[in-house]
Image (tube, helix red, strand yellow):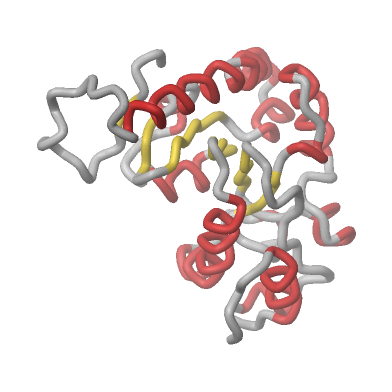
Length: 215
């Protein structure tokens, strides 16, 4: 496998990838899309029926809801980078298997590195578990935390509202908080440069995710 030095090269490799059995049943791989300088990177679970047909992420019913959410923070699809944990559709929209997620992780890892977003928004439990494997989405949602050098903000998957309408408001409220999370992430980035030293606990649990103070 050649070096993945650009988003376009990653997409080319995803389209020709045969590293897991999902490649045998796909119509189109779905590498992800968006500007390479996006401040926000959204990570979903995997392509569904419509995504598999079009080769684009979040173009089905959940994607329509996402397109309704983005204007609430004065953004559109063209302003964010959208990716998934797996790049090919699991049959019958089943959950992706650990081996399938592992096979795709190299692509997502490199996309995160190249985009270098100010904020990663995980959509649903599978993408949240990439950063916080021991958490439940019901407890972690709506709380921004650090994972390494990334600020990660888990929310429920937009598809959850399609199955349970009572979850719609929680998703909308969590999404509307994204601008404030971005501001907080930026302020903490300033602190980490050494301009401001506000923590007395730098020697404890450095490998554990740290919830940001506003949330």
